[in-house]
Amino acid sequence: MKLTNVLGLLGVAMYLYGCYDGLFIAPADRFMGDIQRIMYVHVPSAWTTMVCFTISLVAALGWVAGLVRGKAGDGRWGWDDWLESSIEVGVIFGGLLIIQGMIWAKPTWGVYWTWDPRLTTVAVMELMFIAVLALRGFVEEAQRRATWSAVVTLVAYVNVPLVYFSVQWWSSLHQAQSSSDNVDPAMQLPLAINAFAVMFIAIGLMGLRARLAGLTRVALLADVGGEA
Amino acid sequence: MTSRKWFAALAIASAVGAMAWVAFGNLGENLVYYWTPAELHQHGDKAIGATVRLGGMVKPGSIVQPTAGSDALTFVVTDATDSVIVRTTEIPPAMFREGIGVVVEGTVDATGTFQSKRLMVKHDSSYKAPTSGQMPDQKAMFGTLSEADPKAPGAPDPAAAGKP
Image (cartoon, rainbow over all chains, first blue to last red; front, side, top):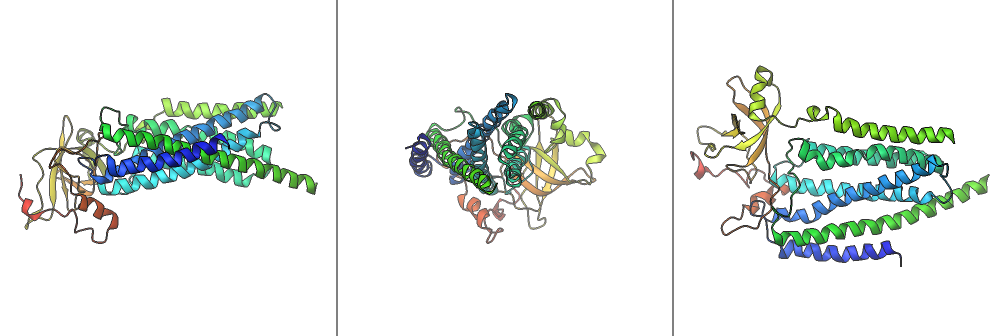
């Protein structure tokens, strides 16, 4: 069994326990009550989205490095497969992140959405990575598709540090990052478990999706070759 | 091959350029989400009439609940140096209380009172278990997600009217 599949299954098991702990064992927050328990899925989604897009960055750099050395193409398609898979999985967790955040925001802030720096930068990040996927849909030739999407991924990645530091650089409605000092010890365990759980699930999904991307490309190339 | 290298160089240059724009550009000035009371006053007349956001802390002791004579809730938003009186007919979120951070959206009228059309409550990044008697009004919070009757949960308690 592939390592990514093992991690994915381990992630599902950890997620079940982490959510159980977060829902039934961890205490409610003194001001937000049970609503705060959404933190155990919202924060892991955020971290995992960042991890996915960072993998996209590495994949884009890997492909561009091949271009520079004149070796793109044969044997280097893995970079492109992982670029596609990591952006797709990142966009899914980014979408979850936004929905979970909105559900948390309405009862506590009083609104589902507001254009504060954190929410705005997250929305821009999500849209830019969706745009990379859209671009891939428009470019048929595999080599060109890989190069173009690597380039736009390098630009889109600028959003990731922006999202992270948005709450520190600008005054926002969204709270800044917590540390272990201001999170109740009983809340830290389910948060840590789910942080790894969601990351493992994402890695499992990315592994499956990257293999599918590879198979699709090989099949399409064979198809094109047959017609020629 | 050479054109490929140029392409790669261009890609990296644009990424680095974008990073530099973020790091050294004036992005921060364009991303002002709210003014503090002091910043609001600094803008003087320019702040009057325009829709702006004001952020700060609800000054303890300043909340005046709606009464039979007035349907507005008033409170003072303050920062370290300055303060602004805020008036709203909106029902505040359940977490609204003295000393909490708020962001209000609305306009400043000629008397300098901030007429809020949207009241948002900020929560800080600390998460703690309640000590006895600290649990919040959960029904009011969950009620906001169903919106079946938004006026029912979290409606200001008439008994609290006239509280200083």
